[in-house]
Structures are given as structure tokens and as C-alpha cells.
Image 1 (tube, one colour):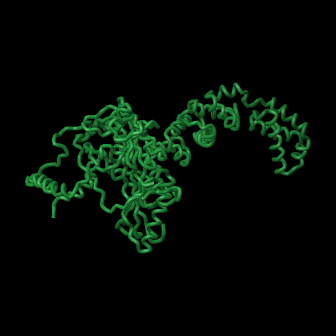
Image 2 (cartoon, one colour):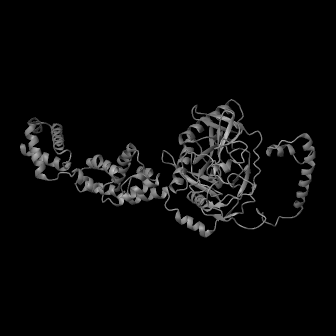
Image 3 (cartoon, chains in turn cyan, purple):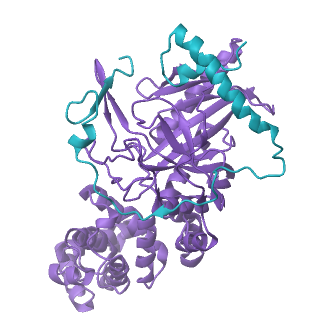
Length: 94
Length: 485
């Protein structure tokens, strides 16, 4: 039984992978997990959880509008567009 | 509620914050029909772009939390919530998960019978809105103007026990948030959105049943109707021995039913983790104090105060406290009136609002200062005009022209006739023209006498185009009729 459920991860990431790729990737990812697991050997019971590696705090921005991208620019990289919208495959059944 | 069962309801409310720019970038937070014009690398989710928190959004969020009696946490964390949908270009939504900025609040609703109920608020967190999808026959279109607009999500505890309470909670929440200027609060346009979690259980049971989430509750009426339907559906199902499935259902207002949207076969796996792009948010004490100081009077505080200070009916105070513009319009008007403030409330709520509705004018666009309402009533008390003339002639003209009541009375010659000899002359004239009515007074019983007096008041008003001081006219008519005897 693999520790790492590659099918679930692939599904969550919306990445299609073949059986062969699965065989290749699963042990690799497991190894990475094992490596990270070694962190658990440290006793951290006396240390407060940290959400960031560096202790710093968010800088805030004033509520002043900047110029947005011209629409042509914004849509430039879209796989499909009608010049106004991003066009994507149908999402819901009508 | 059907005999043996009771409902347990919790609401999740999203409110768009009234900022000029988005939550994490300087694109305009502004509705427009032109798609994809308020977008930039940050809200489009382009690689390498970084979010920067909008200070005003935090300020408004804190304001809302304070008004809802929450505990504000000095430090809070932004997290990524992962899911795939075309309206979410980064494939994750920046939100707050484990450490929201506010928890443990409440608001108090007042039911029809006057009883009050405290509904606890579990948490409030900040997050960004998603874009908009428009579904066509063979494809979908995506507009990302709304992507990144600042939101707060207000999560109640499951303290709500019936559909009416849910509506009252939502209305109260809206009234407060709009009053303090945090959101537009428009359910139909989506600046305020409501999802409900509802389950049923045997009455008196402490355990919670399987909860169903209902979406698309975009009016106060729909909240009540959808919940009513859903509670009945669940009770019927349980009675038939069916199991309630944990699922998301959509309210169909046309058919007045809820239908299953998706079954949560697998628990959603959003893989939350702290957003490495955003260090913790710190709300310094000093800043918090500033925001507290800027909050001002809240609707309930206003209501309590005006009842005490102005001695108006609770019913009126309640209506006034639901709209800040109306509330302070009343107060300003009351301040400039020398008599009882209840009369100010009466003329505003029943006459002015009626005229505004007819003329399709918003109170905030009324072209005269509120103090003119007080002046108008002062004219009535000084016997310069009658109340009828004030309401029917002067007030509509004020709305139309913005002129002061004094000027209107002067210009339109509405000044009431309070000159005794002039009114007497008119009365005597009408006696001469209507000897029958005079006779009726002479020989009639009390009822007939009253009728005759009423008739002559009508005559005098007709002759003076309603400008005779009605009280004076009445007194003179009775005096002269008696003299005729």
C-alpha cells in the first residue's frame, strides 16, 4: 500500500497522468515525503507554531486605484477570447 | 414547525466591502458592464505577481466586526484555499482559515412578538471575491473584474431556529453593515450574499442532524421561503425513513423548491495552507482604537437614544434606525422644531416618504435641509398655515423646488387667514346664502348642530381656498350661530 495516493493528488491538481507516469512518479514523491518526514524527528513541543519562516508582518497599501491593464493586454495570453471575455470550455450543463 | 422536529440553522454571509480598490491590488472595485477592464497581473493570477493588502479593506472589516461585538485578533493569517474553477485565475482563493481576524461576536434580533434573541457570530474573516462566469450554449465566458474584490464572510453559530429568525438576522446584519458604511448591502446585485446551513433534529435533542447547504438566497423573502421548503423536505424525508445526505442545494425561486447541486461524496479537499506571499496581518492597538472611535452610534444605540431624548414611539424609532440617512434627517428636523418630535416623525414617515416614493427621489437627494421640516411644523404651530396646507401644498413644493417653507407660503399666498373680522364677514355671508343650515342648527339636536357647524366650516374653507384658520373659523361659526338664536 503506497503512502502516497498519487491518483488523488493528480485529480486535485487536475493533471492527467498515464499508468507509466504513475509508476515513475509515485516512488519519487514518496521519497520526497520521507525526506520531509525527517523533520518530525525534532521535538517542537516547546515552540510556538510559525506560519512564516521569517517573523515579519504584512505591509498595507493605501486604497488608491492604479491603472489596470488594457483589455487587449489582459486577454493576450488567453487560449481563446472574443476580445472581451476569456473563453473557456463549457462549465455547466444547460 | 411540524410537531416533533426542530430546525437548526446557521448563516454564512458574504459582504463586499466598499473600497475604491481590490483586496490585494489597486484595480478598481467598481461594477461595470465592460468585462475585464479592472484587471492586472495580481488579480489575473500571473506568475511573479504579489498581493499587497488594502488598508481600507482591513479598516472596514474591523469596523464590521466591532459593530457585531466581535473580539478582534491582533494577529491574523491569510491562507490559500485551493479549488479549480475558471472564475478563480490563481486556482486558489486568498482567505483566512485557521486564524481569522475576528471571532466570538453576536447580534440581537427582535421578533414580531417583541422578544429578543441573541444570535452568536462564530467568526468573521477577510477574503477575495471570484470573477463571474457567463454560461453560453457551447462554452463559458469569464469576466474577472470582480476577481479580488474584498469580502468579509460572517459565519453565525447555529443559533437560528426558524426561517423567520434567519430573515430577521439577515436584515439586522444588513442594516448594521450599511449603517456603518461597510457595504452597499444589495442582495439582488450580490454585494451581500447569503448561504444557509440547515439540519433538523427531534425537538429537545442536543445532537445535530446532517446539514444541508442552501445557496442562491438573494432576497430576504427567498431566505425565508427556501428554508421553509428545505425544513419541510427534510422532515418528510426523515418521516419516510430516508437518510439526509450532506449536500449543497440551490434555491429555485420560480418553483419555490431547493434542488441538489452536487453531492459531497468526498469531503472537499481545499488543502488550506498559509499563503507564503502574505506575512501575518497585524492590527495594532492604536489603529484599533482609531477605528473604534470612528464607528459612531450604531442603529440600536440610536433607537434607544431617540426614544429617550425625543419621546417618539418605539415603532417609529425602529423604522428610523434602519436607515442612517433617514435617522439623522429626523434628528436634524426634530432639533429645529419647537413642538413634540413625534409630529416630526409623523410628517417624515407618512407624508415626506410618500411624496419621495411618488416622485422617485431618494431621501439623500432631497433638495432642502432637514431643518425645513421643523420650520414647516413651526409655521403650523404659529397658525400661519394649517397642517393640511403644510402636508398637501407646502411639503410637495419643498421637494420639487428645495425652497424654504416660509418662501413657499409667501410666494403661493398660502398664509392662513387668522383675521377675525375677515372670517366673520365670510361666515355671515354664508349664513345669508344658507338659511336652511342656520335653521337646522337652531332647531336640531346635538348631532344636527354638529352637522351644521361642519357644513359652515366647509363653506368658509371653500370661500378662502382652505386658508382660513380652521380652529378660529370653527369657534367663530359656533359663536355666530349661537348669536343668531
